[in-house]
Length: 78
Image (cartoon, rainbow, N blue to C red; front, side, top):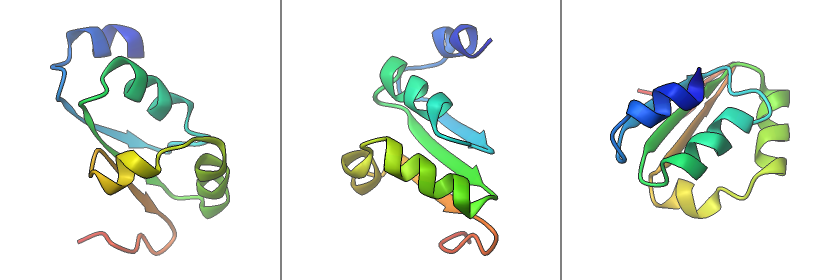
């Protein structure tokens, strides 16, 4: 299902991932649409730590291609 949606998406699409878990979906989006902007909303701070420990997204975060909002406070959200 995700692969079908990504195939139809513009190369620079905006994608929102709710409950990003361990980050596998986000990584798949990054691989198939490297120019996409991705917003990840993860309510579980423990899973957020797993996600950040598993993937090398620092460059994408600095470049604004990946934005992470983690609960329960969702700091940085406005």
